[in-house]
Image (cartoon, each protein chain N blue to C red):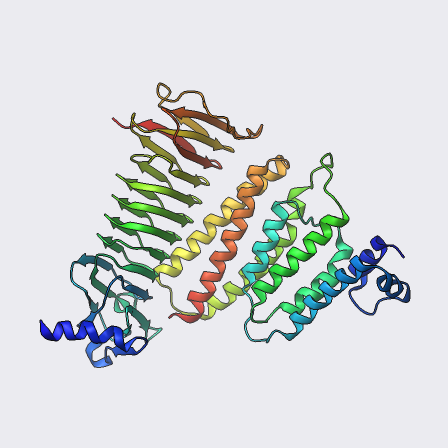
Length: 293
Length: 216
């Protein structure tokens, strides 16, 4: 305990001192590497992985970060570093001729609850649970699953899909073909955009929240509760608007009117007092508005 | 010489050498003196920037697509104005901090352009698909470069396969938007989708180049 406390005291004093800890090549072949880093409040963890495999981030209440990397072969190298409260994890391909299965590396990372994350990966699932801090997650083909996270969440994918359960704060998502499902959210600022993916928002619209959801050719579906309060504007260039909540959607009672376009099919209305703002749009996809059962 | 004539001369011939008539006008006109000083300072700053890092090609494509979408520039309206523009822009290419510098120049130039030709509310809309020809051509060139690079890389990872699939999706969406814009040139929403799709493609190509080229 005393040693641990001493470390906690000394580390901030080291300030900008950088500790570079690398997994040696000998450790890599089909093995498991575990690293521990003591941190103070609100660390930043950056992960950049070109390997195939899963990245799992979970939290605990200790001021320590544990990184466990499991590698399939020595054809992918894993490096870690610490600079005060910033922890970096990087995987690199050592042999470009390696087979896909040889380039697999899985990461299990345990962080303090209040941690900022920056994860960039090519493929494989990114799973984050119970982490409270801003996060930027970028992936080409990997899916992203978030559970009970909060902060300013930024997600970019090309083909990867996102499942966001009980997320809070702000969410910004862009994708080419990825879908996104948002379940039981507590989000007050949402901006979702996908070219061909589908969007599902199933949950409350917080009062004064702003919500933008846009798909090129995919389905945009929102399911709200009858206690929600929001103004709705739905607009599609070539698609259709499927309003399954006519009984709850009244004419817009506010002064602000969106300019209707003679080229688009649109629907505007208000649920209850219209406190939040919900904007849905598509190019050729369907927009569906439903009340939750 | 009048102020408008000086602006036209700068626009067509660049900053130097100014004609005798232009110099005489500048000597007696404070606003034109200031304008000339501003442009000279910008050009001078551009030349001093170190030539180390090239701005990403997507920056040019994105800027152009955005300006075209907003109707600020049009392919067919001012072909003669491109010369000094391009030479000035060329001065920035391949230079560190070019992003910021180009932004400054664009703001200055757009302000200059708007001052010369105030928007006419009744003017006919541009032929939009025509206006995107240059953007599409630049993207095609960029795509060719990426394809060439990727062909040299033997690795076919899941990520690379996904990138190729998504490039096809974006291409299909661009085609759909182009068709709509061709049919309804006044449809601002369709123009916005098209502009966004072009930007997305340029970003996707940049990622493909980065991932395919480095592998780490």
